[in-house]
Amino acid sequence: MRLFAAVLPPGEAMDELGLAVDRLRALPGAEELRWTGRDGWHFTLAFMGEVDDTRVPELERRMERAAARQMPFPLRLTSGGQFGRRVLWAGASGGLAEIRRLAERAEAAARKSGIPMDEHRRYTPHLTVARTRTETELKPYVEALYAFEGTQWEVRELSLVRSNLHAADLPGGPPRYETVGAWPLGGAPARGGGPRGG
Image (cartoon, rainbow, N blue to C red):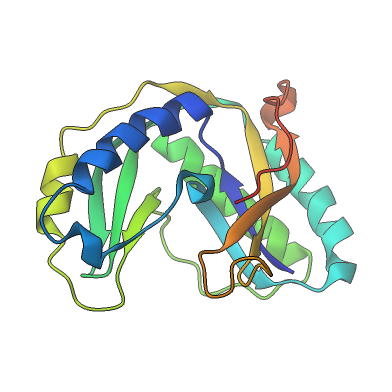
Protein backbone atom coordinates (compact mmCIF):
# COMPACT_ATOMS: atom_id res chain seq x y z
CA MET A 1 0.00 0.00 0.00
CA ARG A 2 1.12 3.58 -0.70
CA LEU A 3 1.51 5.40 2.61
CA PHE A 4 2.49 8.79 3.96
CA ALA A 5 2.53 10.47 7.36
CA ALA A 6 0.49 13.65 7.57
CA VAL A 7 -1.11 16.41 9.58
CA LEU A 8 -4.79 16.72 8.64
CA PRO A 9 -6.30 20.19 9.13
CA PRO A 10 -9.68 20.36 10.88
CA GLY A 11 -12.85 20.95 8.87
CA GLU A 12 -13.08 24.62 9.84
CA ALA A 13 -9.60 25.33 8.47
CA MET A 14 -10.44 23.54 5.23
CA ASP A 15 -13.69 25.50 4.91
CA GLU A 16 -11.74 28.76 5.13
CA LEU A 17 -9.20 27.60 2.56
CA GLY A 18 -12.03 26.34 0.36
CA LEU A 19 -13.47 29.86 0.12
CA ALA A 20 -10.06 31.23 -0.89
CA VAL A 21 -9.57 28.47 -3.48
CA ASP A 22 -13.03 29.14 -4.94
CA ARG A 23 -11.85 32.70 -5.66
CA LEU A 24 -8.69 31.35 -7.32
CA ARG A 25 -10.76 29.07 -9.54
CA ALA A 26 -12.57 32.14 -10.88
CA LEU A 27 -9.31 33.64 -12.20
CA PRO A 28 -8.53 33.58 -15.94
CA GLY A 29 -6.88 30.31 -16.99
CA ALA A 30 -7.90 28.43 -13.84
CA GLU A 31 -9.55 25.72 -15.92
CA GLU A 32 -6.07 24.69 -17.12
CA LEU A 33 -5.09 23.64 -13.58
CA ARG A 34 -5.99 20.35 -11.89
CA TRP A 35 -7.45 21.47 -8.57
CA THR A 36 -7.14 19.12 -5.61
CA GLY A 37 -10.34 18.37 -3.72
CA ARG A 38 -10.63 19.20 -0.04
CA ASP A 39 -10.71 15.47 0.77
CA GLY A 40 -7.10 15.45 -0.39
CA TRP A 41 -5.91 18.48 1.58
CA HIS A 42 -3.20 17.59 4.06
CA PHE A 43 0.33 18.43 5.12
CA THR A 44 2.48 15.50 4.02
CA LEU A 45 5.22 14.95 6.61
CA ALA A 46 6.96 11.89 5.17
CA PHE A 47 6.09 10.11 1.92
CA MET A 48 6.88 6.39 2.04
CA GLY A 49 5.53 5.14 -1.27
CA GLU A 50 4.72 1.45 -1.55
CA VAL A 51 5.06 -0.26 1.83
CA ASP A 52 4.88 -4.03 2.24
CA ASP A 53 1.98 -5.03 4.49
CA THR A 54 4.37 -6.94 6.75
CA ARG A 55 6.14 -3.69 7.70
CA VAL A 56 2.97 -1.81 8.67
CA PRO A 57 2.63 -3.07 12.29
CA GLU A 58 6.20 -1.98 13.10
CA LEU A 59 5.64 1.32 11.30
CA GLU A 60 2.50 1.96 13.33
CA ARG A 61 4.33 1.25 16.61
CA ARG A 62 7.08 3.68 15.66
CA MET A 63 4.61 6.34 14.51
CA GLU A 64 2.87 6.09 17.87
CA ARG A 65 6.22 6.65 19.63
CA ALA A 66 7.04 9.58 17.33
CA ALA A 67 3.69 11.21 18.14
CA ALA A 68 4.12 10.68 21.88
CA ARG A 69 7.46 12.57 21.78
CA GLN A 70 5.89 15.66 20.17
CA MET A 71 3.71 18.03 22.14
CA PRO A 72 0.64 19.59 20.44
CA PHE A 73 1.40 22.86 18.67
CA PRO A 74 -0.47 25.75 16.98
CA LEU A 75 -0.76 26.02 13.22
CA ARG A 76 -2.76 28.03 10.71
CA LEU A 77 -3.14 27.93 6.94
CA THR A 78 -1.78 31.09 5.43
CA SER A 79 -0.63 32.63 2.16
CA GLY A 80 0.78 30.34 -0.53
CA GLY A 81 3.52 29.62 -2.99
CA GLN A 82 4.60 27.45 -5.88
CA PHE A 83 7.06 24.70 -6.67
CA GLY A 84 8.41 25.51 -10.10
CA ARG A 85 5.60 26.17 -12.58
CA ARG A 86 3.59 23.04 -11.80
CA VAL A 87 2.44 23.04 -8.15
CA LEU A 88 0.41 25.70 -6.32
CA TRP A 89 0.19 25.40 -2.54
CA ALA A 90 -1.12 27.02 0.62
CA GLY A 91 1.41 27.55 3.38
CA ALA A 92 1.41 27.48 7.17
CA SER A 93 2.41 29.71 10.05
CA GLY A 94 2.66 29.20 13.78
CA GLY A 95 4.49 26.11 14.99
CA LEU A 96 6.79 25.73 11.98
CA ALA A 97 9.69 24.40 14.04
CA GLU A 98 7.34 21.87 15.62
CA ILE A 99 5.85 20.61 12.35
CA ARG A 100 9.38 20.26 10.92
CA ARG A 101 10.39 18.25 14.00
CA LEU A 102 7.30 16.05 13.62
CA ALA A 103 8.19 15.49 9.95
CA GLU A 104 11.71 14.44 10.96
CA ARG A 105 10.32 12.05 13.57
CA ALA A 106 7.87 10.52 11.08
CA GLU A 107 10.66 10.06 8.54
CA ALA A 108 12.91 8.45 11.18
CA ALA A 109 10.07 6.13 12.20
CA ALA A 110 9.72 4.99 8.58
CA ARG A 111 13.47 4.43 8.18
CA LYS A 112 13.67 2.44 11.43
CA SER A 113 10.78 0.31 10.17
CA GLY A 114 12.92 -0.70 7.18
CA ILE A 115 11.22 1.56 4.65
CA PRO A 116 13.63 3.14 2.14
CA MET A 117 13.19 6.91 2.19
CA ASP A 118 14.35 9.55 -0.29
CA GLU A 119 17.31 11.70 0.62
CA HIS A 120 16.39 13.99 3.50
CA ARG A 121 15.60 17.60 2.55
CA ARG A 122 14.53 20.50 4.74
CA TYR A 123 10.80 20.19 5.23
CA THR A 124 8.59 22.93 3.77
CA PRO A 125 5.07 22.74 5.23
CA HIS A 126 2.61 23.06 2.36
CA LEU A 127 -0.83 21.90 1.30
CA THR A 128 -1.16 21.37 -2.47
CA VAL A 129 -4.21 23.08 -3.95
CA ALA A 130 -3.51 22.67 -7.68
CA ARG A 131 -1.16 21.00 -10.14
CA THR A 132 -0.53 21.19 -13.84
CA ARG A 133 1.19 18.85 -16.27
CA THR A 134 2.58 21.74 -18.28
CA GLU A 135 4.66 24.79 -17.45
CA THR A 136 2.10 27.32 -16.22
CA GLU A 137 2.35 30.89 -14.95
CA LEU A 138 1.21 30.46 -11.34
CA LYS A 139 2.20 33.91 -10.09
CA PRO A 140 -1.35 35.39 -10.30
CA TYR A 141 -2.64 32.56 -8.08
CA VAL A 142 0.19 32.94 -5.58
CA GLU A 143 -0.47 36.69 -5.43
CA ALA A 144 -4.20 36.09 -4.93
CA LEU A 145 -3.41 33.76 -2.01
CA TYR A 146 -0.93 36.19 -0.45
CA ALA A 147 -3.40 37.83 1.94
CA PHE A 148 -5.10 34.58 2.98
CA GLU A 149 -4.84 33.80 6.69
CA GLY A 150 -6.94 31.12 8.30
CA THR A 151 -7.89 30.65 11.94
CA GLN A 152 -5.29 29.05 14.19
CA TRP A 153 -5.91 25.52 15.44
CA GLU A 154 -3.92 23.06 17.54
CA VAL A 155 -2.26 20.09 15.86
CA ARG A 156 -3.06 17.21 18.20
CA GLU A 157 -2.32 14.07 16.17
CA LEU A 158 -0.06 12.40 13.65
CA SER A 159 -1.86 10.46 10.91
CA LEU A 160 -0.80 7.61 8.65
CA VAL A 161 -2.65 7.87 5.35
CA ARG A 162 -3.09 5.43 2.50
CA SER A 163 -3.18 6.82 -1.03
CA ASN A 164 -5.31 4.84 -3.48
CA LEU A 165 -4.13 6.01 -6.87
CA HIS A 166 -6.58 4.12 -9.04
CA ALA A 167 -9.89 3.76 -7.27
CA ALA A 168 -12.13 1.29 -9.09
CA ASP A 169 -14.98 3.81 -9.34
CA LEU A 170 -12.73 6.65 -10.60
CA PRO A 171 -10.28 5.28 -13.17
CA GLY A 172 -7.79 7.97 -14.05
CA GLY A 173 -9.26 10.25 -11.40
CA PRO A 174 -7.56 11.89 -8.42
CA PRO A 175 -6.17 9.74 -5.61
CA ARG A 176 -8.44 8.78 -2.75
CA TYR A 177 -7.09 9.00 0.77
CA GLU A 178 -7.86 6.81 3.76
CA THR A 179 -6.53 7.38 7.28
CA VAL A 180 -5.23 4.02 8.47
CA GLY A 181 -3.91 5.22 11.83
CA ALA A 182 -3.81 8.34 14.00
CA TRP A 183 -1.90 8.91 17.21
CA PRO A 184 -2.24 11.75 19.73
CA LEU A 185 0.70 14.08 20.18
CA GLY A 186 2.26 14.07 23.63
CA GLY A 187 -0.52 11.92 25.03
CA ALA A 188 -3.20 14.52 24.19
CA PRO A 189 -6.70 13.26 23.32
CA ALA A 190 -6.96 12.60 19.59
CA ARG A 191 -9.36 14.62 17.46
CA GLY A 192 -12.57 12.75 16.67
CA GLY A 193 -13.53 11.40 13.27
CA GLY A 194 -13.22 8.21 11.30
CA PRO A 195 -11.18 7.31 8.24
CA ARG A 196 -11.07 9.92 5.51
CA GLY A 197 -12.03 8.83 2.07
CA GLY A 198 -12.16 10.71 -1.22
